[in-house]
Length: 202
Image 1 (cartoon, helix red, strand yellow):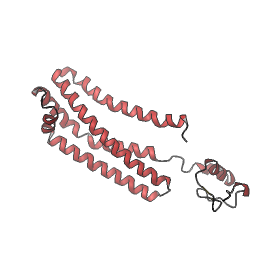
Image 2 (tube, one colour; image 1 turned 90 degrees about the vertical axis):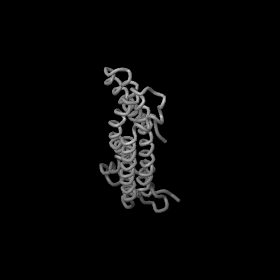
Image 3 (cartoon, helix red, strand yellow; image 1 turned 180 degrees about the horizontal axis):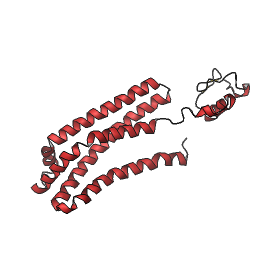
Image 4 (tube, one colour; image 1 turned 180 degrees about the vertical axis):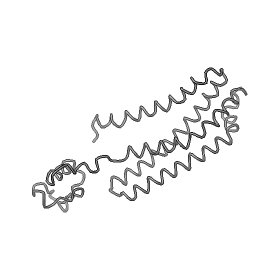
């Protein structure tokens, strides 16, 4: 069960990440404010569409990271590596396809979504969307990498600082790797080092 401290370590970076993602659109609006109302409106229209694309890429990355986490939890390093590679390739392909579609069909997409907008607004939006489309592959790779880093365990070798009996006691206290049926620790392999009282009874 996660403690409040563990949850804060997990939630705070996610909140900061989402705030930064939203601030990107706000910064774009501020920077083009000198160009007039049409430019501001065009940027705002594209930001709504871009945020939807970013959310889809984030969901894809999170789903792949869940699979990687399951493999890591089962100590299947080879499968975890394969799943991580597939996630990166799949995200790159998906975001690349979205990039090409948005860059090539930006006018059609904007007229379909915001056909009632003024022509000057749509023209500004088309220019901004064409530029924004090329950021999607990089955002996809970033989201996948961030999700994979969150799923990786940094304490894989934290038991090396213990003496043999202390190492197994550490594993036993964490109650994650002790195999009751054999009395051996799957993590440190301790058996002869450990007093009989540490062995689980079946």
